Length: 285
Image (cartoon, one colour):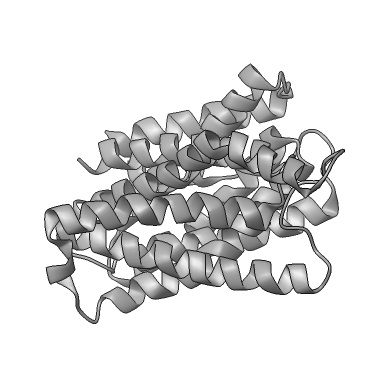
């Protein structure tokens, strides 16, 4: 159960990161965060009402609020880094954040076996070499990595049941939108852009966002689903295993960039992806 849901998390996060990275090459990163998360709020609100999740309200939801405050900072930094690219090099650095939930698991007394420890080292180790990357992209990715790690640790503590998980994800996303919206407002007041630059009037920018709504919805909902599957994985098995198996999403992002954008992985990057897969097998078994 842990391995299945954790690997599903990696697939969803990898695709969401790829989509978010593509969108921020055309749309301001803050707008991508706010719009995609707003769509997720609407969907999650409907799910909470349909399942009666509001009855799970309790003090543990403060963990979801904290995750909602950290999440937009991490997403904004990561999307900006992915926009600077190349994705196949930037994305693996994001897996450094796995140190946060793994550290929490170790502090709570989890002690991985030898095979599991080997899997953690292989699957959790980021690829630091490859094509040239701007220093700004590296710094943004490191900030995002530890933000993502913090979100993983917080959301795992925000609920103890499936309906409670829906409510926790809803609260997290509402906080995401509030924090991201406030940041977008401040950015615009300081001369930043909320809409893409277009050759015509302001409507052209709105048109770009409107045309991108299906992709924005996919990014927001895939990110929500990934948080949900990670929470289930962490609650049904060792956090150290769940966290590391969930952190191999850069392999998915890199493969998507290779297939869609024709980004080529260097030999050392391909070797790193292969080692991550070996580590995944060790952890899963």
